[in-house]
Image (tube, rainbow, N blue to C red; front, side, top):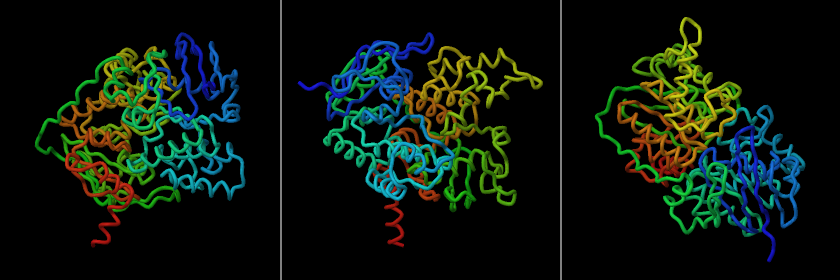
Length: 507
């Protein structure tokens, strides 16, 4: 019998008193798509860093085709044929897409340009090779990571949430490509919180809980409910029913919002119209890079309109287009940005100090001085109520797993009890148990009369949450669609432009 491509034997990794991985053993076979399942904080990211040479195990060994494998860096892993796409991206923001790729992939500029564009078309991962990374959305940056990884011709490809920014049609196209890669001799380690994807694409799954392996299964032999129970150790709660309520007052209006940005890589907004009332959840769908970041900036107040056009953005019945974020928050607005590290939280500050960033008006400061006891109590409540896995409230935000930091930021904003809550990518990188909890909380707030705007690139999430869905494409927002009467494939056509083309022909 031939040796597995990759074998892990009793791998252990600790960070101070925290044991992230405990005696992990698994095998990844040749021509296999192998899933790693686990809650946020289960040790998945640490394990992938060990396999990719970012970290060195404290105990245990790795074998590559039966021979000892010792990795000193990601470069040494790539030389062995291991490539990885991280959940938190490893790109230089001041460089262009092609410059970032050229740091890893050798070749002439013209050849690299051609290959980037060809891979983008093949996988549905189009991105401008000449754009600077700082001008790209989270979804576009993920595309760059995937393309860069594929261009190294790996024997083992590690993918962390690779489909979170793709419409259904592109997901299936990517899966077809992954199957072709597998059949061509590439093994894939696949991390996803979408359990139906795991069942559709993977032939093996290893389940982690609290840093330990709790089982190896063939996911095709289990339904999503079984996999979720194995992963989190309990049954999933039932979805919260929608409580019918009469339409409330208008909490957010965009009236013919237009903008032509100075940044040549940004997306222009054209005649954007939107109405959100109390007791509603409105979702905005779209392939990443179609104006989501620009639209979010005008809603949050990070981008402002001239005073003469302030009526184009209204909150709680008042024109706010000219107001900044703090002034909008005083009206009852709260915001969860898609970029949790850097915009949602300061990585180097403790969770308690991150609470102060937006919750200070709730009595966490008095006469300009921090009330440490109240700040600590607020943070402790957030950690408890939103199941944030952290050693303490004084842990640095950057030390948390991505999903746990997301739970903290969402919890912090919900605890402000706003009239209007805007959440961008609410469960990006969050495991199924935590994602379900976040969605249940949003539904409960909607039933209590809060107005909630959600931008998400996960259609399943939008259909689970929303009363109405609008699609953003090339800076233009579609008319609202009733989520209960619309199919995901129809939204996918809007996202890819087919619906707009059909409407233009019939006009």
